[in-house]
Image (cartoon, rainbow, N blue to C red; front, side, top):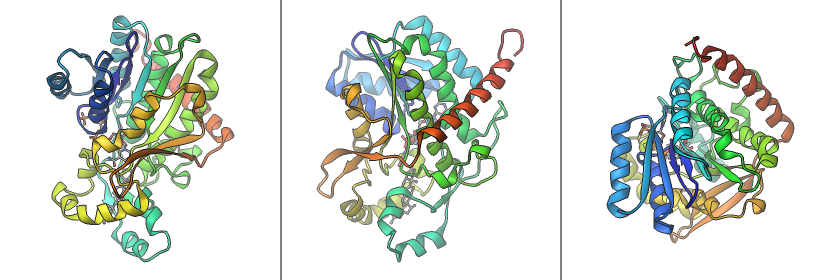
Length: 337
Ligand SMILES: NC(=O)C1=CN([C@@H]2O[C@H](COP(=O)(O)OP(=O)(O)OC[C@H]3O[C@@H](n4cnc5c(N)ncnc54)[C@H](OP(=O)(O)O)[C@@H]3O)[C@@H](O)[C@H]2O)C=CC1
Ligand SMILES: CC(C)=CCC[C@@H](C)[C@H]1CC[C@H]2C3=C(CC[C@]12C)[C@@]1(C)CCC(=O)C[C@@H]1CC3
């Protein structure tokens, strides 16, 4: 995950390449006085990202911190370092995400091609992918811990840097159009049973963002979710090899005319993330997901779409995640780890 900062504060989220790095580039293009902090699990890749940013913006202030959101120990350590380094965080981008061992359901793809839902199938990937999840050293499902819970613990740990009534801060989650209510179950919110852990984790992200607004707006902390569209990154190269995507490019440009959600480049994908950075908090809708879109002619814009969820289910999920936090924290009290 990675981070960036305001002129007298800062923000954090996921970044060495992909959408996170493109966002950093775009933030620095807009204002190179901004203070950025990249939180990454691999310090060599973090250094490479920092060097890339400094080569185009030599006077920029770009910090790095080691953080593996798939490990609570690492998240706690990262939060400690950040609290020693900074007084306030203005924007926290929660962008780290994984989709391990993705498999394409070819039968569903072919069937979908001849159905009325072909456009929405391409926009959301609904029913086209399955994943094989695993269990982390913390005993949690890896996709859930990486995409949702590790970020949640980071937010809780950074509360004192994030919650200021007189100078509000913003959480910006990279969710997905692949978030799907039917893939998520409150009884199995880590998705131990099914094969759509990615879809479930992104739905959990949406629920959590809504609950965080209810909980923290009064303390000066606001949360929003974004869908970057379909973007060519390491995540999508895990689904199909890059040469295959290159072969599909003419078809993807054609599909883009109909859906506008095939943003394809990381620059385009970062549109809604950058747009949120520039909005007045009062103008944002906590129940909307902000989608990066690219038209057939290559024009970028942001489309807010109402999420398929309600307050009651978001609060029920919040209760579950607080219970899990309590259980996990017991293991990390000093002298217990
Ligand atoms: N690409 C797409 O089409 C779409 C992507 N998204 C979402 O966008 C976000 C960014 O993904 P994208 O840029 O596409 O893919 P990338 O794989 O390029 O980026 C994912 C980033 O998350 C980091 N990351 C993964 N696991 C961890 C971890 N345990 N701790 C810290 N950092 C971690 C990766 O670090 P490392 O380099 O170490 O692997 C990488 O920097 C994800 O949340 C993804 O779900 C949503 C919709 C569509
Ligand atoms: C002709 C063509 C483009 C074929 C590719 C078919 C599928 C592999 C893709 C169609 C829609 C894509 C999609 C994603 C992955 C690849 C597809 C299923 C995502 C699920 C990737 C991660 C996300 O968060 C959302 C994407 C939605 C669309």
